[in-house]
Image (cartoon, rainbow over all chains, first blue to last red; front, side):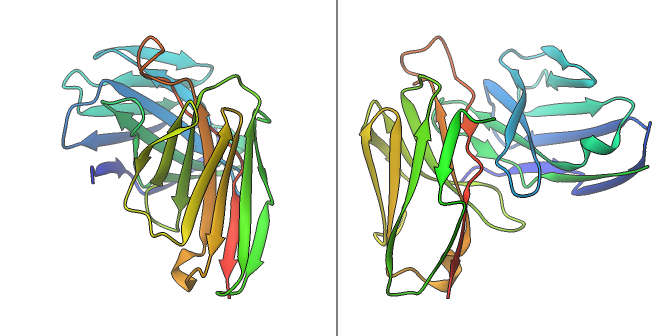
Length: 110
Length: 117
């Protein structure tokens, strides 16, 4: 099936630092999603992107739909301890079949 | 998020047991999904239901049997599972993208942690 490459695999940062992660696919998508998953819980939708070049914010989170339609980026500004978790990207071109990245594990050191 | 509820949260079963996982969504969605989440692997889509009709079956072994009696409820019946089936099973729902205006994000439950002895 479709492979999404998500990087980095893990990050250890100091509280207050900014975070960047990205996701690339081998084929074009028309929708990109970013989720966060806390231990023992399901993924929670953070941001949805529907147009190439689109830049969307949700509080301290900003995500971009890459212009090539094969990548997406998530930035977190001024990280706080509750940002800890695993962040997943997901993309689709068909609607029902979303492909997921392997996740970026974020640790924030107070 | 309580829009998608899964029960039980944890399940331990032997390889010869029969059990069922339940999912209920309160979001007014009409598409429901089962995913398998294993450590260090991407989420694997198992089944898709649109308006109670199964529209995707991603080569899932027959020991997993889904059932969707209505747009709000989804079950996964388990029978003679293998140790490699131990994983977190996630249910999700969305608006049917074929009827909505474009692709719709999926909203997840908290999953059932399944352990096969």
